Structure formats: structure tokens, C-alpha cells
Amino acid sequence: MIEYIRGELADVTPTLAVVEAAGVGYALNISLNTFTAIQEKKEVKLFVHEAIVTGGRDDSFTLYGFATRQERELYRLLISVSGVGANTARMILSSYSPSELCSTIANGDERSLKSVKGIGLRTAQRIIVDLKDKIATSDLSQQVPQAPGVQHDAVNRQVKDEAVSALAMLGFSPAPSAKVVTEILKQQPDLHVEQVVKLALKQIK
Image (cartoon, rainbow, N blue to C red; front, side, top):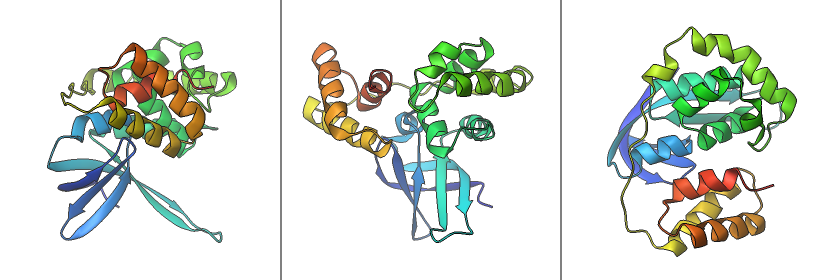
């Protein structure tokens, strides 16, 4: 089992990080929170969750990377809930910071959870029922740090393209995504790509 990967950040997008360690480039699926935490670093350490699917024609081995142990623990708690798969869990962690997610679940805010793509009322209720006590009895909400703000001079066009690309990798069609992203940037032109994607996730139908 891989606990973490430490190495050079060879490439990063809002949904994928490539970390080179000992001459091997590891592609890890990431959330927007992890993207925010690592995007301007040269050397990174990502905590790993391995997803291995066997027994069919399309066996797969997928790595998920997290900037903190706490975010990985939240991811593992989410995928333990019936009806919540890997991509849905990553989308939840891209819609909320870890501390926001802990608060949402602890407060039983099913309406907020239901706003995430792929989460219906029953699934939102199941997440709260299954995880509320686990989060309350752990120190997850106290441990998870907020990702620091990142300052850069990316032009709107680049932000738009990266945001639409990230949304496409999360399962959204490019055309409606581009429309929503454009409207967001018209109203708030100075937003960073991860902020745009978070807002778009709450608006795309």
C-alpha cells in the first residue's frame, strides 16, 4: 500500500497532479482543495488513496492524492457511504473545504449537500446519518487547515479555459460549463480558477 508520494510536481491541473519520484511520474486525481494547496509548489507530498478494480475486462488502478491526511480521511469516509463513488466524493471535496464539509455534515445541512452534482436528497441524508457521529467523535474538523490563498496574474481567458477543462474532467459538458464560467468571470473577473470551479459546481444544472 502506498501511504504518500513525495517528489517534484511535474504538472498540475485543478483535477490531476503528476508527481515525479525516483524517475517515475505518478498521476494522481486531486480535489480543488489540494490543487489550491500545491499549485505553486515545486516539491510536494501527497497522501495517497489507491483504488483498484479487478475482475472485469477493464481492470484499473487509480491513485487519488490529498494535501493532508485529514482530507484523505474525509474522502475515505465519503466513499464508505452507500451511493457515493470516487468521483462523487472528489466532487464533494471540490465543492467544500474540509472544514466546511465537516460543518455541513455536523449541522445536518442536507439541502447544501444536495446542491452537489450527483447527490440527491436520499444520498445527502445517508451521508449525514452515516458520518455525523463519526465526524463529531473525531477531531477532523479541528485538524483540517484552510488552503492558503494563491496570488497570480492569470488572464481571464486562461482561467476560463482551465475551469472549463476541470469541469469537463468532473463530468460536465463543455458548452453549458463555458456559459456558466463566462458569467461568473463577468461578475468577478479576479477570481482564481479553483474559485471559479467551486462556484460553477453550485450553478450548473
